[in-house]
Amino acid sequence: MEFKKSQNIEQFFQFSLSAIINILIVYIILVLIIGLGKTLCSISDLFSTHQFAEEFSKIIMDVLSFLVILELFRSFIEYFKTKRFRLHSMIDPLLIFVVRELIVILYVHEKTTDNNLIGFSLLILSLGIVRTLAVIFSPESDK
Image (cartoon, rainbow, N blue to C red; front, side):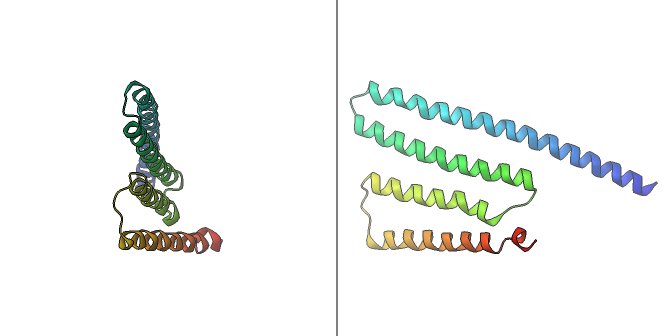
C-alpha cells in the first residue's frame, strides 16, 4: 500500500513538473516575441530622427542584447529537456555576453586600455577552454 501511494505522488509530481515546464516554455516564447518586436520597432526610430549614428548604435546594442537573451533562453529550454544542467550550455550565454560587451565597448569607441583588452582576452580564452573541456569530458561521451 505504501509503495503504491509513493508511486502516485511521484507520478503527480512528474505531471505537475511537466505542466509547469510547458507553461514556462510558452512564457519564454512570448517574451522572445515581445523582445523581437521591440527590436524591430527601433528601426522606425532610426528613420524618424536626425541622429542616425546614435540610433544606429542603440539598434546594434539591442540586437546584441537580444542574442544574449536568446542564447540564455535556449539554455533554459535545454535544461527543461534534459532535466540537468550541462556546463557547456551554461557557458555559451556567458561567452556571448562577454563578446557582446567587448563589441559594445569597441563600437562605441570608449577609452579602452591594454589591461582591459588583455582581461577580455584571458576571460574569453579561459571560457573557451572550459567549454571545450566540458564537451570533451561530457558524461554522455562516456556512454
